[in-house]
Length: 239
Image (tube, rainbow, N blue to C red; front, side):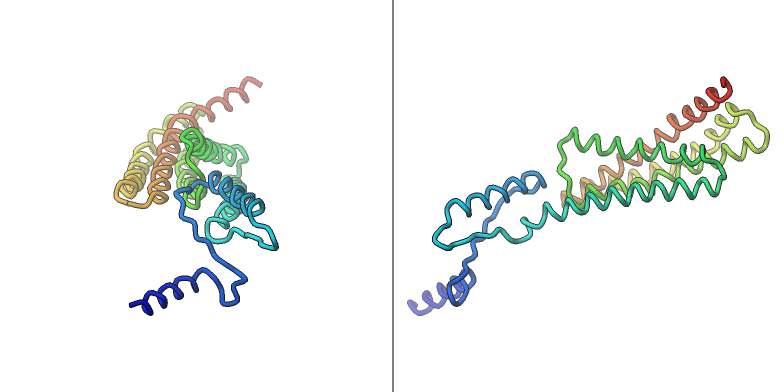
């Protein structure tokens, strides 16, 4: 019995200290999960190791938690660059297809409004950025641009047939509102279903914010985009 306890103790210690006793590992369990709180914890641990370890001893914080803030920071920077690149690509593609810079600008505006609203809600609700949240912008961009393209394509087609701008806006909106609302409801309810059924916090937040982005995109396409088109037309007629 004593030998078994001794062997068990040595096996346990071998997991914490290497063979020449030059290195020891201390495992810390924590409930900290947010990026900002993790950075504060890492700084506190580094300061504590420098303060309490001396006589040639040195401490280094390692593991997943130590790499997490840096990984999130890189991911956020990459998402910002990819989002701006996607906006520019969408703008140039629509300009080439529709042969209109104004149409290209109009197609980007609902997307910017959607992304700003979603991240504004994240900030107000104090949601910490993680791998799931930062992906919302890219997913929302791909979903929301479709609504604007449907409306603007109908609008340009009616202008080409000789319709006046107010009538073209009204008729285009009347034609696309049913398919846009139906598609948005199906997608939004699908993501809400994922949020309700999942037990993973990151997946739940991602689904909720994506559903929010779909809803904001729908409202922006039905109410904001037509007003912007009419407003620009009136200003151009006034000049």
